[in-house]
Image 1 (cartoon, rainbow, N blue to C red):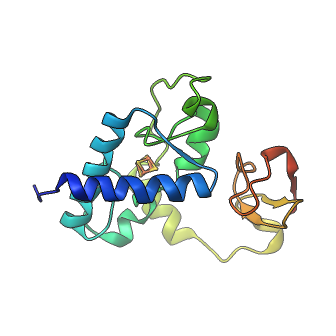
Image 2: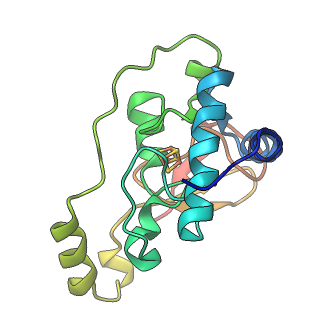
Image 3: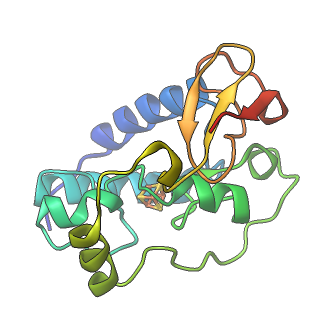
Length: 167
Ligand code: SF4
């Protein structure tokens, strides 16, 4: 296993915490667990060349692992539904403030065969066949395509209730 120093972990911790807070996200306040997960991310970065999810088995083929490079494609829906991402590295504001409990989080990532099938079948979407709704921040105009609006606008920090469905 590649060596990771505590200095590297501390550096990543500082960077990710600042980035997360600036974008309306929150790292898990359990510092020991968070540092362990960051250690896992750094090990994976050294091993594969990219920081794949520390709670999932990567293939080492970046193209196949793109959806689980941290932050993974599944973070936001898991935050919305379970107050934490699959590893619990990221948590919702309510969980960060101790107002929501974090339980076990089921794996949202589809099985490999399904992922490969979806990839080969994917056609360019038209405006009426978009795979996800588009949400618009009424305060600053930020647009994002996802199942629901984010907890906080990463640009102007307006709360979820200031979003409207755009498409
Ligand atoms: S589950 Fe959490 S830690 Fe794992 S890749 Fe997704 S966001 Fe990162």
